Length: 313
Length: 203
Image 1 (cartoon, each protein chain N blue to C red):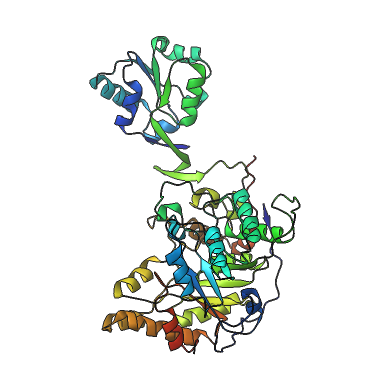
Image 2: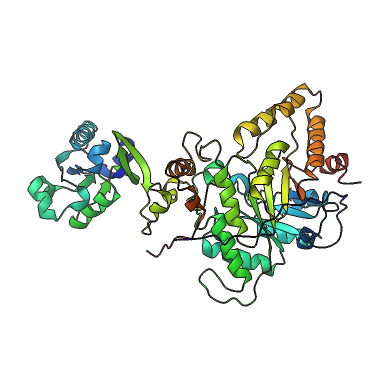
């Protein structure tokens, strides 16, 4: 069964450059403001000792506007994003963004966790399909995908209105701030079409895959034409091999030759990677609403990069 | 056509261990086409089992293992089946189930049942349909994303599709890439922007 998308009023994703210092207000409120936003990402532990992950959170919580918690990223088993989001709240951070994939739960499981997350005080969601189990450390697991990300967004919309997937009334409705993900390749028209489907369901923000090619990103912005805030992904490159691997293997990532050459020529590729990230952030500031820092590993250099980019003082 | 793959010979052995009169049933439709249950494969398996010391008392090749009418129907093909103390079915899971329902001895299949596929020319093509019972293949001009996308993505490609290849195996084309090409060639791309609703699994 298929339904038509209701046409949306569209306008440009307007940017408002400025210095961000982890200002007051919730992430949802900040999305409605004009400030340039910085978000980060923390992985729950592979096990039950959560203190190193909480330390990682603490290393950025003073200067970011929201922190994503990954949901068994790369289809690799970790503590649940909902449990770790709650642990973050109990450890002094109030604005976690719970990532939720469609890979591991059917429509009952997804809704049950959404209601649980709301009751536990988790304010934000980021919805995605999720990597296939074959990509991770449980390759023989049953891939669920009962709902796809578009269908999950529709279901979240229903929950927010006070009823479940089947139309039954809820005792209290969640009020999530909801984000969606997208690759930012202007030539992938079906990926853009899918993003437009997602945006028909009351979406509060869009988070993109890591951006390295600003010209391509500008083309993408022109094609999407939305007033939903777009937050561009940033992954600091740490080595020649990492740049090559991401360019060749990670869908949605395209690294221009110039960046490969700079990393290749650098005496210290980590420092050069930081400079490249800072330059990218400075070029992104006038054209989108924020950046999402997703380093491989801990946020050791995130603050430095943001200072270099004059996003932090 | 049901796509099957033969189990490794070693996996069949524990089932026949200690049996004195093994009977084999092939399938002359899908499994014959897949070369997992036609006459040559039945004779080859019988031979290998005999050589490994497992006595075969006979075999039969019904038109379709999944459409066997009765035990008498099998007896008419080869009355040795009456003396069997176990039966190996070289068909799909459905064929094995049907044979099991008309016999009173242990029954097992010698194949893995992979999917509902087809034959494009001489080459079998897997996973063309997953028998979901709620067919909307027309929305995609005859290419089913529910069956052919490992994530059953109904509203467009996932973020793992790269250069027209699938995240799960870069050897395979992303089904959404195939849909895009087909729909483009017949000027139907705009219809893909309709939102596909979740499947009804009650059917």
